[in-house]
Length: 319
Ligand SMILES: [Zn+2]
Picture 1 (cartoon, rainbow, N blue to C red):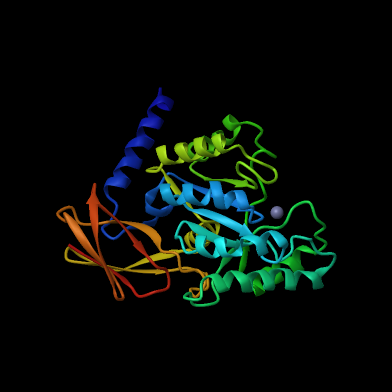
Picture 2 (picture 1 turned 90 degrees about the vertical axis):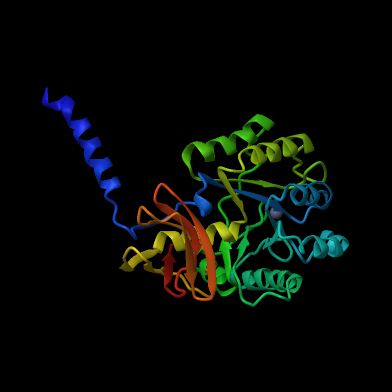
């Protein structure tokens, strides 16, 4: 008899805690803009079919992709000008896939492979303040004889972050259905999902254009639930999020002041986090000020949602 009341009691307790959340109580949301899950698209080897069949589609649909470029081989020499043009798009994010894709036989071989590729990638964006973080994808099918520690140090020296292990069609996902199911899995789990491609409609390890188009259609259908981003932004957000600490400095009916810090280097980890803060019941909307940045946040169910950068000035919310 007593047992069956326990779940109800637990429920009542939980709901009364939620209702009594103090003004100023703040959470860092799991994914940017409060999205349900995250998705990354990657493209390897600077394959020319990507210039023809991927770049224009991503631009048209405003979907971000990470392009793991090899910048010191013959394929690159023949397409360099087109990649330089493509990299101007905010949807085409470049990343390091080594200079030659020939692999390395020892730790000494790593540095030039990473650094020489970085040099070409940095030249694509002279306007950016260096250094900044880029993603790195280990080349497949070639020797890579380097210890874990040596690799970690080399990546850090070159401000590179390692992407998740390779997974993509047609190698790991043999059908269109299996490829699209990766999106459903990410949504069902509320986690990050990703797919990496080589050739699309041509070149090598080819994914048919129809599969790719169906995938983009599906991503567009779920746009409201998915944070579709590049690999470095994903890494920055999750690293900042997982080490973030929010403190309520001051909270009253006229304003809320918060401090947001994390354990990452602010020069490299500069991705804004999405925060949600409980505000007084009579606030209809609020201004959010952090240093020189001022925005307006809508309030839903007594909670304001907005972006803020860890390690910068205090955040001030006012009705
Ligand atoms: Zn490759």
